[in-house]
Length: 611
Image (cartoon, rainbow, N blue to C red; front, side, top):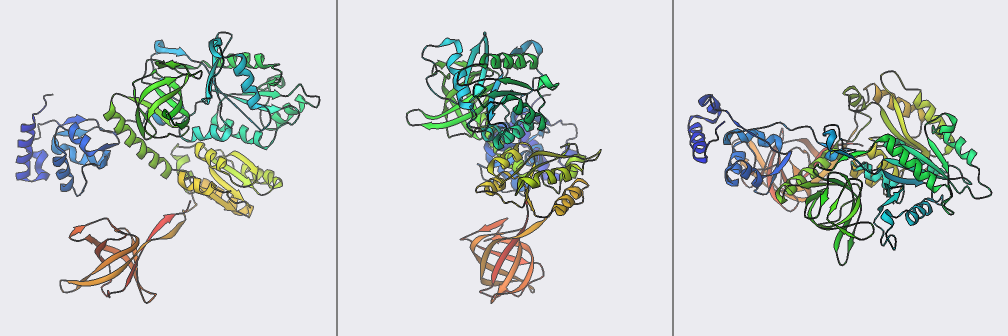
């Protein structure tokens, strides 16, 4: 297809404008629009450059379609599709999202010849004081990669060991909360989870939480029964407790590897590493080193002398010094990379942890790092990430929409996290909910325990797309705020029949959403204007909040409500606007009301879905 010059494009557009915009395509049926690939969101000035025109022309075309945008506005894909034909382009539909935001980067579409074995990534989890840190230290001191003199010179949250000429990457996370926080942000970096259980203590509450978190992640579990050197150690009791929690060990006919170790003396540690290597060999962890690099943030901090320093774990491709990168919604360029031993490197390959310098801002653990071609592409990807995050927060599961999601194939079951007031209630609630399972719908209890709802529960709910049920218990400090921020629904019950009724109605699609009234703002009528013979306009000043076009307005006089209705028109000076914010003046008319008086209070309301 031959591209038009700017002059030809403008001439044809001008001719179409004379005959009427609606007749444009009848006027030139033989002309084929040029395909244009546009991201889900793009800055207006970048869009103008993409369509080989000026930002002013793009702004004018948006105005013709009823949109008023400034030059630095970020516009959505569907709006671009409306105006692109005026410039001779047809916007291509969005492709399905790549694995940029997915849990595990897929290698299904890669050339098998490009795939190479990569080291497994191992996370060690378990109850406090059961020996997780001691076990990590023992492995690190005796198996430093390549036998580097001096050992580890710094802590960067992840490191590699070289055992029997095979590398293994360990994540040094502070607990299962951090493990799940990374999953909650779309990054599952762990290939194998090592569950540490003290032989003298057995399974404790934090051990049970860790089991729930690992099961939700769907990764292989290797159990390290620690402290077997103690006189009071009872490994057989630990094995029985594991079986009670659906973790049947191999010697009892299951598929869970359980090994006795002593992190303090080092006994059994080599056997543990042998088994990790075997699991990795069976699982065949591979990655494409030739792809565009992608990595996950393990931790980040601000260093006084070096600025922002982020530890990242490469998942696919090869990360290089000088790459333009996007981490979450932050942009930057890699100025330097350091290994876990503090040695500078130029490139990092899959499963290799490195510290990187050159980011503007501090990312969060679990944020995805992607390499882009140039700074412009990095800016567009960062803007796209912000909008994806907003959509994901708004799309959290609720009891009201679970049946629709199951019917659409989005989810296979209703995932629940349940916290009760006392331990005795746990089994009763669990048994009653399991009785609701049918051939078509299923209740999947991701985690159930007694105690208050914590931030860890909210993170697990976010990562596993679960709804949190509080039975005679309330959220702890910070849990409610985090749930509201991340869009995780928390429901409270004190009667088991009400809980079962709501869950059953949700599974059959009968549960209606609940809404609450929210006051958005207040304004005072300062003047009343007549427009024509019958219409009157209230000139107002916004005292607090905002008055929006979609608001329901209550007219108050002397503290009494005179009228409640919808806004018919809303203006700021002569311009139609969507909203008028605090400290500004505007004018409005209401459907069905004309009796405004100076001093009247206009109270704006909206409905908000209760989560």
